[in-house]
Image (cartoon, rainbow, N blue to C red):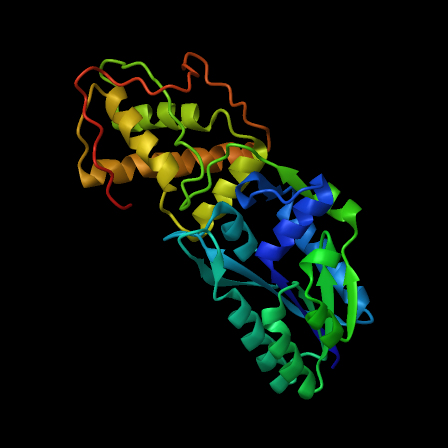
Length: 313
């Protein structure tokens, strides 16, 4: 049976895509897919036309692990049907390491095992050329797919080695990518943690205080932000560190400076997860109504209240 695989170098995809959509290569932290599921399906459909509309085996999405947790975007991608997330690492200067070797290995394995007849590779890095050569020696047809300024971001040697070359249309990136400035991306500390102030209420329970704080933290988020957080919690129950620090500190302050036990911190985090899911399920953009809650972006802790050391979830 004729089938194809789509192999996407995410670093190249977002760099070239931002150049196509916005005229300049933007930092990864400032970019996001408008609708991950739709984008993945459209890439599948477009890539299939390069191979004669044969059946898809799967999409391989290659990215770098930003830290101890997946990014929100990676969590969302990992849940897409027919997509396998393959992860390298980021070095100290933010460069992907290990991604090219994963692409090469998968190309060769797919060809040797005759799992597919065609592979569409969305990349421009000459380092994968050896993988293309070896895969072709097993009879695999390799179609190179470019993004952005392909005259400068696609290796000429790789282009010549491939069986065909084409590029994703600029209009697709314009419709599929959005700029998001100042957002938080877990595990990378890309923005200052969200900070809130809440009033103390005498006799308030831990759960109630955590709920109030969670609503205040989440109130500036868009529906898209909430969807990404919800996807993260499908795979990982840990609260992203940049939310976690504020969540624990502000809830403690709301209860008069209480120092939480491990069980209490677990309860607070559980409330946060519940609130995220509740808000995401409403299907509305969040500016979330939080009547009676302050919306300042400054942390206000009671005098003398220490900020607790945050332990792992």
